[in-house]
Each structure stands twice: as C-alpha cells, then as structure tokens.
Length: 276
Image 1 (cartoon, helix red, strand yellow):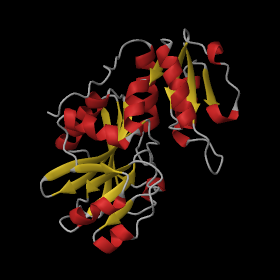
Image 2 (cartoon, one colour; image 1 turned 120 degrees about the horizontal axis):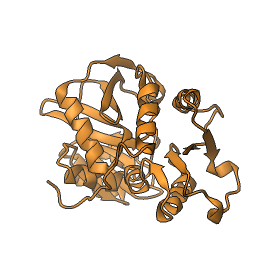
Image 3 (tube, rainbow, N blue to C red; image 1 turned 60 degrees about the horizontal axis):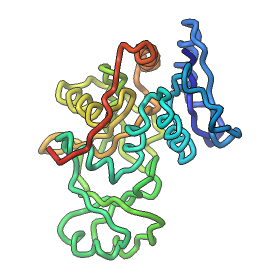
Image 4 (cartoon, rainbow, N blue to C red; image 1 turned 180 degrees about the vertical axis):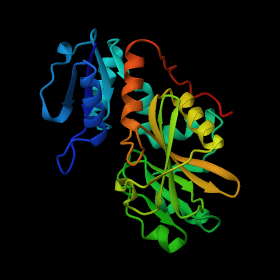
C-alpha cells in the first residue's frame, strides 16, 4: 500500500519536519511515500486512488478537508479518519465531543455578537476563539467590559470559554496510538511555534489523552491542557500535530501508520451523543 501525505501549504514554504522524518523512516522500510498540497495541484476528483493508497491527513485547510470528505465518501482509507479530523477543526463541535466523552473542559458559549458577553464578563474572565481558528490567530482574553467593547466584529462564529488560570505554561500532549509525549513551554500568543521541553507524562495525563482519542476517533493527535486546582482541563484538540520537541515521536508515528495500514489497528468513528 502506498502512503500519501495530504500536506499543508506553509509560510515560509518549508516542509513539516514531522512529515519529512516520518517519510524518511517509511521510505527506509521499503514503503512508497508521496505527498500532495491540494492548493498547488489540479486534482481530478474521479481520478483519486481509493484502493491502494492510505491518505495521511496532515492539512487542515478547507480544500484538504473537502478532498478528505470525498475520499471518505468513496471508501478510501484515511488517517486520521475524515469525520474525526473535521470534528477537531471546528472548535464548537469539539466541545460536544469532549463533553460526550466525559472529558473535563471549560464552560463554553457561542455567539456572533460580542456585545452579548458584557453581563458574563462581569462574573468570570473569558477567552474568545474563532470557531475555525488555528495557531492562536484571533484568540483574545477578555476580563472587563472594556475588553469586550474593544473586540473586533467577528468574521464568523465564535467560541467563548471560561478563562482558566493555570500555571503560566502550556502543557501539550502528543499521541501516537498508545504512546503519549508531554511538552511544556511558557504560555504566549506565539507558543505554538516553540518546541518546548519534554517532560514525564503522569498517569492522569495519559488516561486523559487516550480518552480524548477514543472520544474523537483519533490515532495521531495532540491536546492542550490547563492545569487548575480542580485538575487538568482540555482546551484544544488537534489532529496530526507537528510533535515538536517530542523525542522519538517520528518513529512512533511511522510505526502507527504501518500498523494502521496493515489492519492491526482500527479507529472507531466518534458518536458525540449526550454529555457523560
């Protein structure tokens, strides 16, 4: 079976390191590995191989997800599965998956009118996120009515969550099947691009990560945690992350891909019913 990375267009235009590393490992094992950037090629929809290719969905763009949806509808194999990937892309839908899985996460609201937050922000601090945002773009912390009034008019649906005071550090867990890696780094608006430092994974963190995987039907994913006095809370889940700073992650990802392709691993599609 051939492997095809559905990669994202990057700025600057350099390949994802995890894609490079995993491709090299798989190629060294005799595997045929290709990559595609949907926005940079003309793709004939009925010409997509649905029999002999495992598509590795690394891109979150609308076009890549649309192609993944076409492949899913035609019975092609994708990792992660299309429904799971689409659920993580939409932060509002992600909240329901977390709740249905009984996974601790902040209280959440949705709106398209920021003025409606004025009564709420007088009670608790809030964090405002674009529904389809990524890399922290458009995320704002609001603590006062003045902060709310300063928010720009939203261009689309917004997710509003209770802002949880943590330790001042990001705790990100990267997962490849049953292997979990923990990375810490100082919290900032640009922390997504910083590798951070590897740290031990507690049993509670590992359990939470694997529960997230089951809730979404994911095998390769990451999640962001806020550590509060009441315990950890999941504030974001993303599929097929960069695994920055995670030692030996490329080997774990390559192993998982091969086992998935061989049918040794299966992922149950999520069923986001009532909150547990």
